[in-house]
Image (cartoon, rainbow, N blue to C red; front, side, top):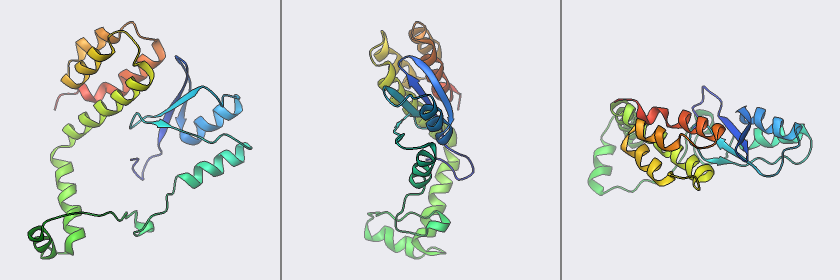
Length: 187
């Protein structure tokens, strides 16, 4: 998920060629302007997930559609960015949480923040592996050495990974290397 202090960016491909990159709005408007409404795959630069844009209507319609999709409505305190979800715990866990300063929600937020700080490098590595794997499967799953490259990615074997993807198409390979880079950083 994007953090509130930066915009989500993405990259668009027409076949094996990168055709646009930037914020979601920039990419959508570039695709609209260039008439590239079909056979385009767009990927979120953080998660590696495919992104769909509705490019119908005018450029203003496209921008309005993206602005509307950026603010999902859900229960909670929207001005604070709070999202309500269900948590299932044993009674002893609820009892302990209820005794914590600020109540259960505040205690859970503190526990999550502490866990994120403790293993920030490991989490960054796992997220990079997942993002690179998603992109690789969608765009490069039919390339020679794909399965071995995926194994090298998860094994943290940068040299083998690079050797296996060396002959892959230039634009998707460069994007894949960018997504995968944090997966090869030492902890």
